[in-house]
Image (cartoon, rainbow over all chains, first blue to last red; front, side, top):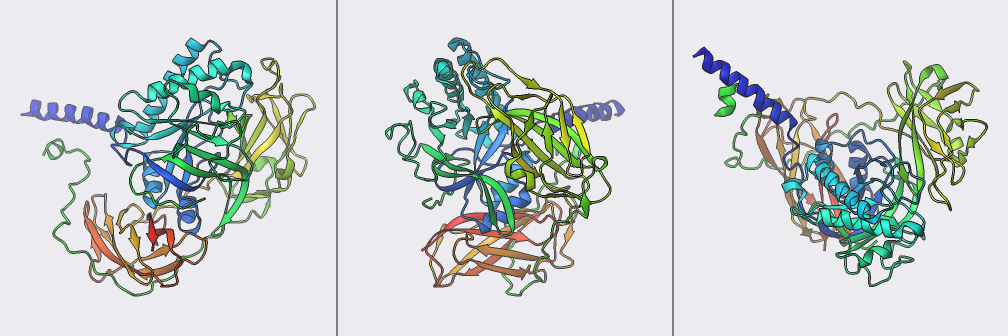
Length: 272
Length: 287
C-alpha cells in the first residue's frame, strides 16, 4: 500500500511539474476579425490599470501589442497570459508585434543575412518563434488564425532582395497549419512595403507607417492602392503624441485599422 | 478524481451555477471609487537615490535604441526634473530635446525608462561607432556611469527617444481582486431603451469570498468622445452575499440608454470597485 502511495506521490509531482510548465490553455480566443477603427501603440505595452482607465474613456478600440523578438526596444514587464486575458476581457482587440532581426543593410546590431536563401530560412525561424510566443501567451488553439506583424524598420534599397526573402519566409512559416495571419509593419517607403506585394504568396496584410496625419488607410506613399486592398491594411499616421484621457497621459503612436486584429469575435468598429 | 487521489493543488471543480437564477439588479448608488493621485516626489532624485542599469538594445521608429533604467532605490519618492544629460564615450552628448524638461515623479521601487536612439540607416552602414559607457549627469550636477551599453552613432547623432515612468509597484491586492469577470451583452441597443445584460463573477480560488463590506461597481457606456453615461452602484449583496470557492454567479445589469445618446459604435465597461478590481467590457452599437 505504501508503495502505491509513493508511486502516486511521484506521479503527482511529475504531473504538477508538467502543469507548471504548460502554457496557458487558451486564455484568450483564436482567430482574427477585420477592424475598422482607431488604435494606438506604445513602446512599452500599457499596464492593465492604464488600459482599464482608457477603455471607457477613449475612442481607441485596439492596440499594438509587442510580444517579443530580439530587437524589441522596450521592456514588457506586464506581459504574460494573465495580463493578456485581463486586457482582452476589458474589450480591447490586439495586434501582436514581433521585432526580430533587421535588414542586413541597416545599422541594427542583429540583422538577418544578405543572402536571400539564408534570409528566407531566418524568416521562417522568426515565424516559428513568434508562433510559440503567441501560444505561450494563451492564444487558443495554437494561435490558429491569430494576426501578427513583423516589425521591419526602414533600410536602404540595397538589401531589398534579402528583405523580400526574409518576409517570404516569415509568411510561409506562419501559413503552415495551424496558420496565423501574417503581416508586416514598416515605413511605407523606407521599408519598401510595396516590394512584398509580389510575394508568392504576399503577406496577408500590411501595417504602414506614414506620419502624414491622415488616418485614411488608402493613402500610403509608395504603396499602390490595389496592393492589400479590401480590409488588409492598417496605417500608423502619427507618432509620439502625448494623449490625455480620463486624467491619464500616454505617449502613443496613432493608428487606423482597416484589417485584421485578434482575437476573433465581436467586432464593432467606427470610422477613424 | 485524479486530482483528489493525488492531493494536488488543483483548481476546485466549479459548483454549477446553471441552476441558479441571475442575481437581480439593484438600483442603489454606491460610494464613488477613490481617485488615486500619484505621489509627487518631495525632492530631486540624487545619484544615491537611483539605481541605474543598462537595458536591452532594440529597433524602434527606425532608430537603433538602447534602454537605460533609472530606478528609485531610495526610501521615499523623488523626481527627475527632466531627462538627465547623457554623455557618450568621449564628448558626444545625447540630445534630449523636449525630454530635457519633462518631469517624472518616482516612488520607491519605480523605474524610469530612458530610451536612447540613433539613426539606423545611412550609406555604407556597417562601420559601427559604438559608445559602451554612458555618463548620466543629473540636474544637480551629480553623475552616474553605466557600462555595457551599445549606442551606435555611425549613421548620425543619438537622441532621447522616450523618457517615461514605468508602472509603479502594484498595490497589495484585496481579497476580491482575484475575481474573474465575463459579460453577456446584446450587440446593439436602441436609444431610449434599456440595455439589459449580465455580468458573471467567478471565484477561481478555493476559499469562499465574502462581499463584506458590500462592494460597488462602476459601469460606463461611452468612449470619452461625446456624452457618456457612468453610474456607481452597489452589488446586490443582500441576494448574494458571498461567492463559494470555484463558484460563478451571474448578476443582472441594467443601463437606461438616454434617447439623446449618440447613435453609433460605443463601448461598455464594468469594473468591480475594489483594490485592483477586475474589469470587463465590450463594444456595442447604439441605434
